[in-house]
Length: 327
Image 1 (cartoon, rainbow, N blue to C red):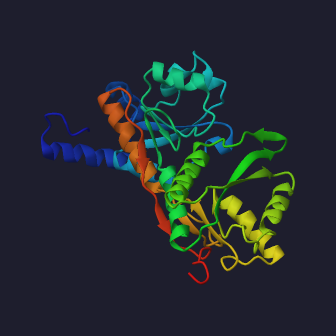
Image 2 (cartoon, rainbow, N blue to C red):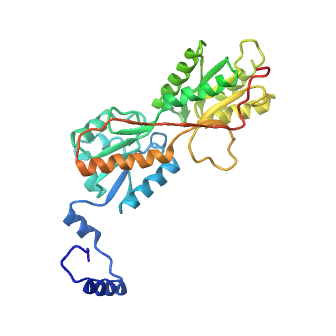
Image 3 (cartoon, one colour):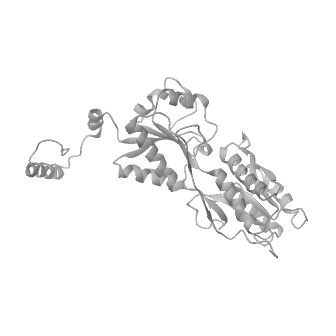
C-alpha cells in the first residue's frame, strides 16, 4: 500500500484497484503511530482576537504550503492561563496531534509561555511577533521609513506620524503601543525625517470604541489645516485610523489629498469598497510561506533557535497622496 515493499508492480496495481473499489482509506492514526509524526501543524492562537490576528492571505499561504508537503493545519485556541501552565504546555503537540506550532500571539506574550515553549524544545515559529528567535515578521521599520520617503519625495515637509493610543473597548483598556509595529514604524518615520533635516512629530489618538472621543480629537487636529505650521501630510499607523480621519475630513470640508495627504500600512487583501489609500503593503503571503519553511526545517533537523526573519515591504500608490502645490 505504501509502495515501499518488495511487491511485483502488476500485483501492486491490482491491490490498489481493489482498495479503490472498496473505498479503503489508510488509517492516519496508525500511520502516525508507526512514523512517530502526525503530518500536522497547529496554529496556536489566544482567546483575545487583537493579539492573534492572522491576515487572510497569510492563512491561505500556510495552508497551501503545508498541502504541498502532504500536511494539514489545525487550530489550537488556548487561554493565557493554560499557556502558562507547566503541566499543559509540554503536552501541546500531543493534545493537537501536531508536529510543530505556528504561534500567532503577537503582543503582550505571557513570559511563562515563551519560557515553557523554549524549555520543552517545542518546534515553533512566531508570526508577526517581535521575538529574539524563531520569528518571522514584516520589516516595520523599513515600512515607516518608506512611507515617509514617499511624502518627502512629493515635497511635504510638515509630516506627522499619527498613532493609536490606549484603546478602550467594552470597558477594557489596552495599553498604548501594545504592538511592536507601532514603535517600529515610528522609528522608520523618525529616521527618514532626521535624514531630511526635519523634526519628527507624533500625534497620539486615544481610541475609544464605546464613544466618539477619538473622532472629536481628529476633528480638532484637522481644524488647524491652513495654518503656517499645520501638517500637510500624515503617516497613519493603520487603515482603521485612516478611515476615521477620512470620515471626519469629509464632515468638516477637508479634502484629501488636496488639503491633506495620507499614507498608511495595509494587508495584501483589501475588502471591496475600502478607501484606495496610498499605502505600504505588508508581505502577508510571504509571511505564511516563510513561517512554514522555517517550521518544517526545525521539525526535520531538531536544531536549536533560529534567527528572526524580517520581510521586505513595498509601496502601493493610491488616491490619498499628492505633491505639494507649487513644488
